[in-house]
Length: 216
Ligand SMILES: Nc1ncnc2c1ncn2[C@@H]1O[C@H](COP(=O)(O)OS(=O)(=O)O)[C@@H](OP(=O)(O)O)[C@H]1O
Ligand SMILES: Nc1ncnc2c1ncn2[C@@H]1O[C@H](COP(=O)(O)OP(=O)(O)O)[C@@H](O)[C@H]1O
Image 1 (cartoon, rainbow, N blue to C red):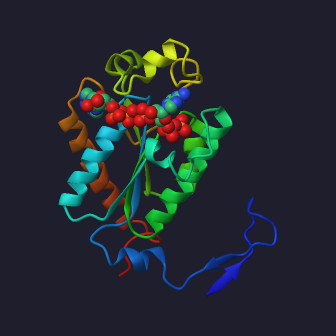
Image 2 (cartoon, rainbow, N blue to C red; image 1 turned 90 degrees about the horizontal axis):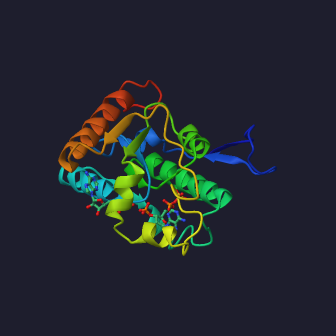
């Protein structure tokens, strides 16, 4: 076990311990490399539905996955956080760290969070190695999300019962360069095909990375 002082914004006097088993060695035990599919979009855009359907398809193919979903995480790890800009940023910071840990353990991680701020998504991306982080914009327009309103939250936000609601009185910054954009006019089946293709291309990209790919 080796340790080092890291030159970043980590707490002072806290070392980083590097274990003997590397992410590559963990990955060799699985039929796939660990990577993260990061879904972002408005409430009601389809993140949870698509994340769940993608995980089902990957599980059928023998992939070891983990799904992190906004509503569920806010019942546990992030139950102390609200919907202010700083709380959302802290929410995404924690999710990014957790997703990174799961990826280092060799899993395919699917996250489904509004993650409305570009800088927070960029911060999450920066934790990962090249080819491991794939930002997917679930590009469903506000009008359609509001029409779907699966949880009745838009109606409550419009009635003034919920404040800081994304798209109503809290901003959403669309990704400028996502790895994939899912368009509302395409079917859910088409979206899943596109997501599966992205996972396959992630496999190829990681395998070609000298430091992150499968060991010889
Ligand atoms: N004010 C406000 N704005 C947006 N969403 C709200 C709000 N209050 C509660 N909810 C519910 O919380 C879910 C969003 O949580 P996230 O962790 O994904 O949000 S964020 O990424 O930190 O912005 C979100 O889930 P999804 O609908 O699945 O996106 C809502 O169910
Ligand atoms: N192409 C599609 N992709 C995803 N969801 C869709 C699609 N078409 C309709 N829906 C519906 O839209 C709603 C999306 O809700 P949800 O998945 O909870 O979104 P989010 O997690 O982004 O809040 C669901 O009721 C789902 O059945």
